[in-house]
Picture 1 (spheres, rainbow, N blue to C red):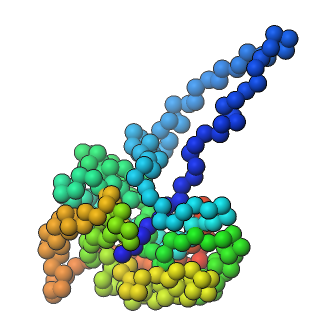
Picture 2 (picture 1 turned 90 degrees about the vertical axis):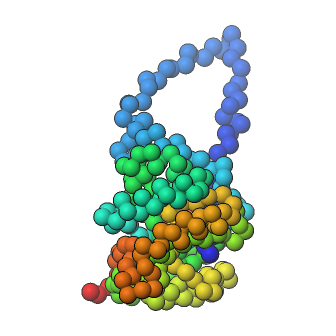
Picture 3 (picture 1 turned 60 degrees about the horizontal axis):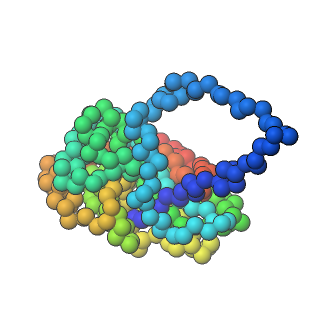
Length: 283
């Protein structure tokens, strides 16, 4: 079960910037300049979520998986995934059902509560399913600045030749992180693409091991996470998942995937910087 990690900056104000020297009569300062208000379109930029934008910065429920230390950067290696447009509406219908079982579900990464989004189908599809997801190929771990170049170079050397293949996402699944602080509603890969992704995880593990970084889970279960909730609420969420999966007839002759996408590339993110590790090759 995957522990997703996000690194957040310090939002506290700078106390020095709040203190200004007193103005004396002998040395008057010019009156402050009043700036005009910003253009109204800056308050709602293109591709924004409108009134939901402020929720993206809500971090009150987030818990670090490792403490912040100056000079450390969060390392994450993953395959980017975009859900095909024609399958988003069907997935959105299940998100509505899941929210009725677990009202505390939030959208992964942007932290928008699903119980708000389900009131507007367009917002639900856009915010919950219209963005880039990722298949983790390694744990999110802290690395030192002097390790970055070496890690990126070795990942590129190990993973530079990757053939094109299809990834079938064919199972709703529930995962709980290592310390039981979050539960994730995810879509798992159990058939097409599983062997290829597993091999890529093994390659990332080899690079991690050479840098004394913790390797991935022994029996990895590649997936993308769609939503999360605080604490271990896996039993409640699992009931919704089991009912939904019956219609896919998994394990039978009429099994079908929920959606399919092509493997495109592997990305390594270190702090706020992103490195392209490889692109797919061949036909």
